[in-house]
Length: 180
Image (tube, rainbow, N blue to C red):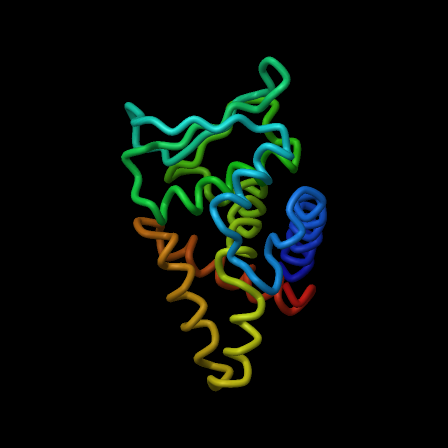
């Protein structure tokens, strides 16, 4: 499992490099980035964003390139925190080249490699490395994962416990491997 997690972290590191080519502050010392910075990052990655109420429970989706852009749709009925996460998650799919077919953020399929990478990419900005570094100096080691789980939980409402625990482990592994 460790080598699988290392591979996921390397893949996310490559996506972070791509994102920083458009928005240098992404997942950096000032993260999370502001809404206008995410909008600029989406434009830089060739995305066009539309927000409207869906007829499903999906939080967001990205479609294959159409007219030179990747259409990214976000469910207006989701709460602000859910939309904040979903934008970053879908952006990861675009940067990773996963958007050859429709990709949507929903409750199933969370164990797929692509979904783990997209979640971790989003969490790299939303659960910042600078905050994890502060925690390392302030809480006993056994409490670190619980603190990070609480932060991840803000974006993971309704996720199965296994998904939350997996993403917490990955987020801590990404910090350990890359100080991100």
